[in-house]
Length: 246
Length: 311
Image 1 (cartoon, chains in turn blue, green):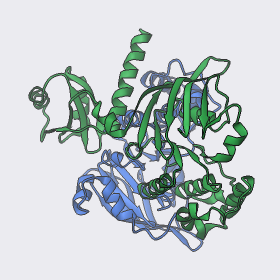
Image 2: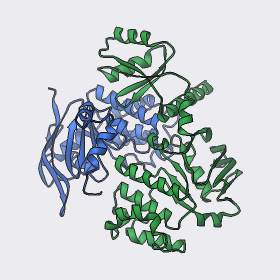
Image 3: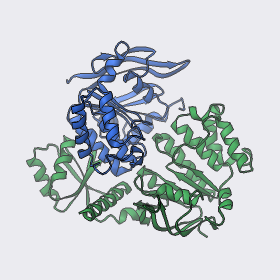
Image 4: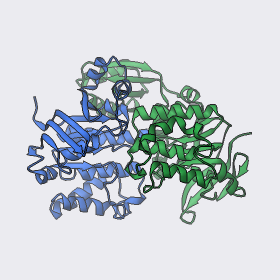
């Protein structure tokens, strides 16, 4: 079995009386594409924020990229990339400035930043856009750029929170090409999505219902267990019984 | 009479340097659900904004409920409901306050048209004292739909209403749209979920401001010209890379647990190529295309045309 890069044990987060994340326990392996699914309000974003060292858990344990999220949240942050659903690029900086900014934040040297920014602009075909403000880019391009800057420092793990929301089917596939390529290079991908065809592109998938992980297996395994032909059906069978609506 | 008519409408931005909508024409019948499908930046939201009288077309004419979008803009605002792509409710008002506000603006009350929104509103009613800004994704969409419906509009404009919404809530949302259709409410909707496109009566595929095709989902699929295969093997990523470099490949892309493939050669030759590349457990079958396949094909063609133009 390959190296474990995320390990949680009864990880829990409460907000007052509300248990947002309820004793979740799971492992993720190096280079794995791990789909973290659940209905709106199931607790995915909260769980992800804890794993990124952005939110302190109420109880339980978790190791991410070899560091304890309670004791060493700053080390966790240095060794991961994070792309949030709402915000990840500065709209009033240009494409090039965003790359340079993130490179700086993640501690790359000036030389590395220069190389990386040329490399990324080449790879994403953004030559004509390099000096344009990010706000002028179409959504799909922004998302590809934002994934690329989230891994600019070659982190062990990248957390992607609904990276393809509202992105058209063709552009979503281009985005997934980047994900596959990252995983092939050994970056572990931890991703949430509401497009269940994308769940099939993951090595393993967990489904959260009301703060708990109700199912965790390969897509094929889940389809078999839940006697379903598609991941849509699997998800529907599990999420339908959710008690807490959002 | 058609509920929406659009005749040769063009819209540019930035002193005519950006062509957002390029000579588009279509019409939507009363009680029809018409889907606008296209990539980001295709011009969908601009069409919504012109039909809801928030933007003026450069040229062409359009009507909503028989009224002209330029001359009769005030009357149109009274008979349409609009859910813009971005969350547009008042974040600092509660659920109930938002709804009351929209009812008041349209000179009505929540009670008067309660039957229209009841199915959705009961789901958000337990949170009626919560501020809209504190609601999660699916809940916001439900509130926005209630607010767009509270004055019993004849025509409903929904610009990506389900982006970021899970499959269970999306299904509830679409069940609701079908019930509205039964009450003769006309719906123009855009979406990036192709399963939703399939639920429309007709869909218009739009790209770079142009309408490329208008047909029912069934006819859109029938018009797919090539044989389509679903393929899988043990290493799906390397399968994808190898099939993309295969010279007989027209197009190859991921599709759930399979890759979808169209080719100029035949199955036997592709299999041989893949076996030579060392692939194992190759599965190969002919499948019926979906709306998503049609969309991807159209976009690829357009891309190729554009890149030829650049050369």
